[in-house]
Every structure is written in C-alpha cells, then in structure tokens.
Image (tube, rainbow, N blue to C red; front, side, top):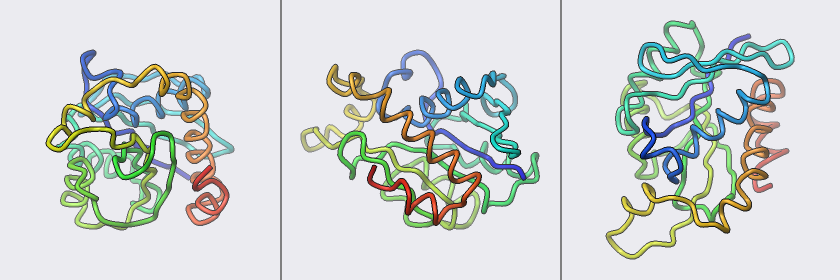
Length: 187
C-alpha cells in the first residue's frame, strides 16, 4: 500500500523558518524519524519511508506554494497512488498556533496552495492536515505574517506539535482517515 504525504511550503533558505513552511517541517520530522533522506528530483524533494508495511512517499514541492497542484498530481500519477491515499499538510490561519485538525474534504479556505491542488486534481475530496499558525496580524498584513518567522514562544512548543503532527501521518497510513481524526483531532 502506497501513500503520498505532501508538506506544503516554499523552497529556499529565505522561507525555511516561516509559518507558511510548516508542511515542510512536518514531513522533514517524519523522514528523520524513519531515517529517510530527501532527494531533489522533478518538481520537488522526495523521500521514501516505510511505516508498518506501508510505503510512504514524502514530497516537498519545489513549485512554490501557489503552484503545488502540479507536483502533487505528477507524483500521484508517477507512483500510481489513489487520491484516497493522499495527505496534504498545510498551515492554517483559522486555527490557533499548534492546533492540529485533519479533514477528508473541504474548501481551500483561502489557502492558495490548496486552491491550486483542488483546481489541478479537480476535487476537494482529499485528506488534509491543517496546522494552526494563528492570526496575530493587523488588517492587510496576512502575507507578511505567513511569510514571517515563528516567535520564540512558538519555537519552544514547535517540537512537540510537530511530533504530534507525525502521529497523524502514521495513523492516516495505517488506521485510516476517520479513525485518525477521531483519535488525534484537537490534540
């Protein structure tokens, strides 16, 4: 059984520690735990890991956030993975910092990465794990906020929140979407 786990973010050192790149951080943590190494290949950085007999393809698209759909679609086709086995990990302004929520479908919520994925795949029925980044910004400052770096307080809590996010990946690939949501949402 194969799964495609996609962390959304922007490539390059200047974005590395920004809120928008939390998806990259989560798949990095899972790869490290599973001793899988990323390789830069077509449309992104890819690592292959095993978890309880499942093959997990980890993807960090190199297409920049707003064009994530191209990389997602390419690896679904290349690896012959059903959209049912796709999990997108993304930042979410509507959730307080560190709050984690998985859903099996839904709107893009104004997130340009999700918007592009939905347009490219022609469906909103795919699993997504939303990692709350909060909304502590003034009107008109949303872009600066998501492309801004974490506060020291957020950094202090980051490791534990990312570890919890990796539990969602493990659950999604073994016990499935519904049981994972039941077990882990709002933890």
